Image (cartoon, rainbow, N blue to C red; front, top):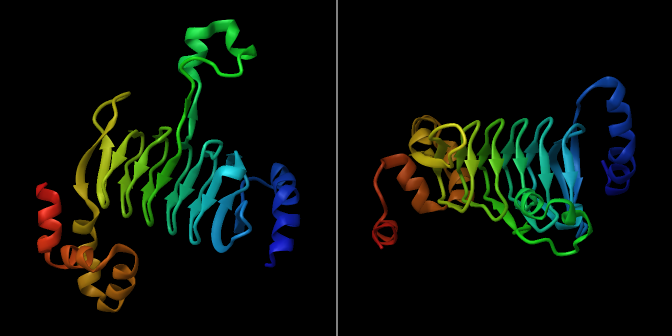
Length: 220
């Protein structure tokens, strides 16, 4: 599908038809800078805001009924999977609305309004009903379990999940441990994994121990 065809069909024709046919996944994405991602798939029933500040990598998947907010900068790197019913945010107004009440509507710079750029690293997975807060910096290869609230920085390959309802997610594992058995059974995939994850992380996935440089970094 050409860039022109994607622009004409995906918006608004497919979305209009989807109102009658139900949710559909549409292949192909054009970023605001004109970069073309032929293998990126986005649901017709996901709410996309602030497209000028939204940058998707190729091979990204965004499922049904999500809210994706690029109003203050949002980068979703190659291969990220966003399931369903999640909010990926780069702004938040709830504090400002509470403290300002009726004055909020007419104030161009409301007190307590949060504007922060957000990033999700390559080949990370966002489980359903999760909230990625403004300013979150999620590393590559991360799994965010369903019903998580994620803010701040999440290191590469972390598995994060909810401690309890309404509390921020915490690190509970490492995706390299999950990947070990598959990579050992399929050595032909090891070069592909190393291409995006790095050779040190491939070693960690295969052998379960830190490379010397990684040990020094984690010890600091």
